[in-house]
Length: 131
Image 1 (spheres, one colour):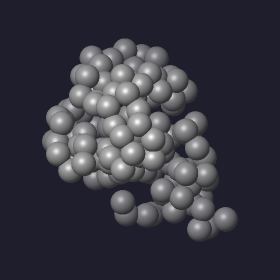
Image 2: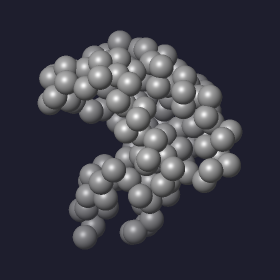
Image 3: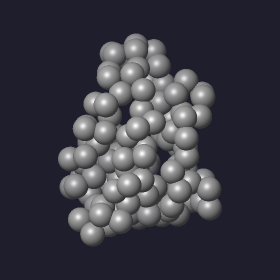
Image 4: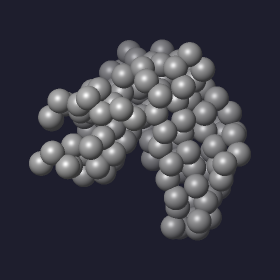
């Protein structure tokens, strides 16, 4: 991700319609259905209700793609403008969800104003180095 980020609002730039990749390696086993359940509160914190209503079917489509993971597995989310957000497990594509609106909403879980972790978000977008 290119970094032309103003201090304190880097998350807004990180959610723009530009290529992104987030890969997470798991250290514990997690059931596939837990991914959607865990995402929902952060989507509600970061995305206006009217936007969530518009993308709800695509969120559910992504949730159906999630599979159980075990220690050492890696999920990746890749966003390509004009193509969509691709979910991969251990390098194998599971499906692609269309829309820049979907990508901005879903990546807000990690990169939004109220992410899973402010520290992790700041590390991901390069804000931590500026402090």
